[in-house]
Length: 219
Image (cartoon, rainbow, N blue to C red; front, side):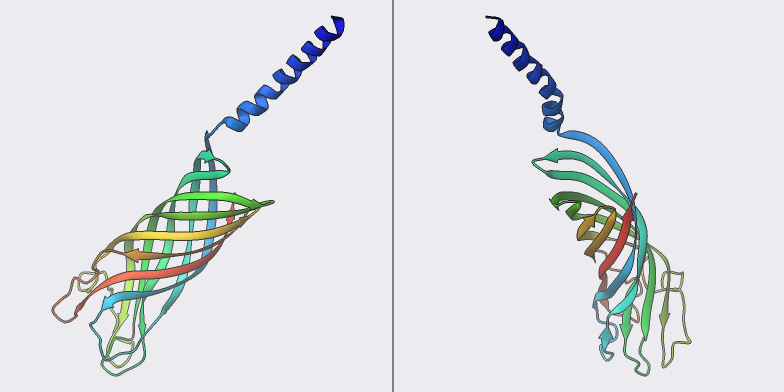
């Protein structure tokens, strides 16, 4: 009997010690916030812009730099779900080959505010794969358009006499790798807003489209 009592007490002790660990493992709702800074390359063009049919279009190259925060709120079977808002300085536009009497380039600087729903999963020690998808709002800060046979004739594309709208919005999607605190993100944006407000001399329904590659650090 003494051995049975000791055995039962030992079993109860082991069960009591295991309860906190099991409760922690079954816990699914939790708030964890991480802030990250990013910098990288961005390539872009104005989709459906037909104002200069004689000019050969080429990719516009720029930078994308900013900060975002990952609010991780839910965990399910090894998958972490969260919301990731951010603020980015984003260079967009379109480039053309140099031809007489054609626009040479649109150099457009935006403040992008994306809010993505994200999911991540650890695939190896300290290595996570992340996916993000959601809307973004773009605010045109300043844009210049080189016109004529040289790029000396320039004006603010978003200004009073400019031809483009200042507000943009659309969808953003990205995929990334996180190793410890280092991030590598590849993604793209597609705008839904017709950026052209001057339809007297220009034609088309230009929409911002771009892709980006960024490296980052998470605090």
